[in-house]
Length: 415
Image 1 (tube, rainbow, N blue to C red):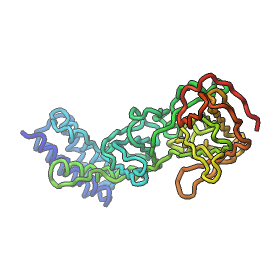
Image 2: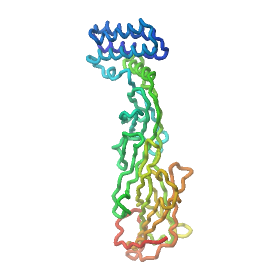
Image 3: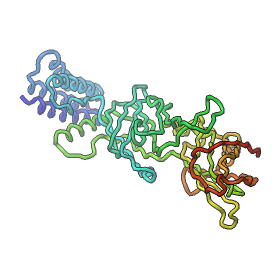
């Protein structure tokens, strides 16, 4: 006897009966469907014992008493449990055994059109959080358009982000099992030249491009489970074809959350400059995925790659520029000067004189109207750089990166 075919027929019939009873609330129709399905189960399997009797009695009770729609649905559920109990010991079809009347595949759609200008993901992670406190369901997929998640009735929150946790070199993930506290943050970076102010100051790497979105209070209903169950059985066993699968539950559209900060420093007597390095304090450590905003905790970013441009009208002056990828200003930032400190060190052409500057710049950030998540910081150094004798007797040109600054003689410049 082909148990698989028997179960297939019963489940298709049963799914239709559940849907009909739920929508119409007609006890007699649900009872007839239950009784008929019970009869088929008993005939096809020759079932005996308590399990088969329970299934048959459930069908008879619903038909004979003219019970209400809710009672018929309960009888149908009993029948479903009985049929699945009969099939469980002999079913070789994992797809059928996977389905049960309390949960079904739900489709979570994801669109990346707002993120692909930064990077095209090769995979994604979707985390679904039941609002009843059950453990979250984590799905990692190389398909970036959607995932199917088997869910019971209830309300759900969800987050999505590009790639998986282990594919980032500059990011770490915290509390992903908790929707409200889930966070992505920058990892600590080593430094040979910057001295932290205290043990709590963290020097971090620039983050990689990161796109995320969230969805709250999605509901899975009994009707959705019944429909998804019926669709799943029919699609799986060939009674109709479909490339979609699952009932649409939510649509997420991840966006880039990484900021770009452009820093420009205007310098007089720029011909005396050999190299530059800087540190920007008070930047957000990470991003709260469930809250959808930067972290309140702060970190320091190093800026070690600068370009020099000489003013074509006056070659004695010009500017240096650098850019920084980060999570932006921390949540609750009030734009007061002392919230962000810009520490700048300039190595002069003698390869030993270092000038240290400290600027309070928390009020100086300007948003770019034409570029999302872009900040500009402009600083005027003020006094010209002192004249020094170039190492070796000739100017060596500007070094764009920070290397060995030789025998350093530091001078802190008061502003």
